Image (cartoon, rainbow, N blue to C red; front, side):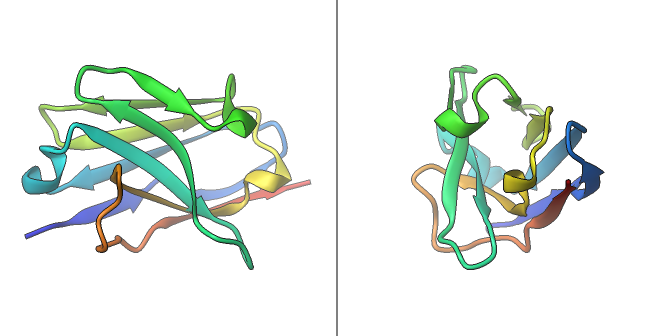
Length: 114
């Protein structure tokens, strides 16, 4: 059974930090690449960052230098450390494999106030 449980979101001021966590089922975590995605109101879901089982990371340009993705393969957990947050980072954040499966978790809301 595929399971994704995101947590760690919240309300933060511009310039603040948050750390998101995603607990995934073992079946899903076998995928080589895991990613964090986000969907802002009225916009399509976008890929934010990816990490391979070996720890290689990639980021969308808008978050480079501010966000750090990591994974703990022993805990089937993916993390997203977010810093220097901006109002345009406001979105619901999801984790999934990359390419993504059709199944999505409930996501976690991140709201950055100006």
